[in-house]
Length: 196
Image (cartoon, rainbow, N blue to C red; front, side, top):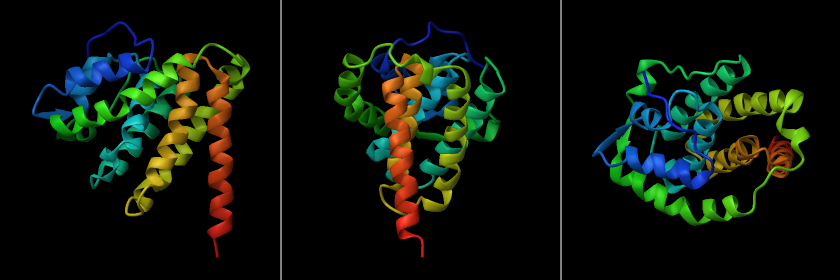
């Protein structure tokens, strides 16, 4: 399905791979996956969540497809798979190359900042049982996105949470994982505050 690549080492390398795929007029999930290689489960979850923080999340259907991709990938990571599998119906979903390039440009500066300020620390939060718990959160949190898609910014906030968690796993930086759990706590608090 895909060809193997050298794994990305930071967020800007992830964005470079997306830009490469976005040279086409229409970019499918399969095209992006081909740029990553089939061994890149955590980076691909990170990429999808980053894209949802950008204005691309306002395109109808994008949060729902993104949620399906993230849940599928996180479940595969939990199962110990080292190669990505996606159903054909998801692989064929596509987006305008221009919109994808705009989203990448929009994310460059924040991603450069994160790249400069991340390094291996609090590694206990990025491995073993904590890694399993983080992947479970990456399954549970996006499961609500299809129902919330019409509410502005809600999926972007959830995607930012997933991005913090997976960026921490990707860079082995437990500080970002703990920040992601802080966001989870805030989201739970908001739900209980607004629930009738």
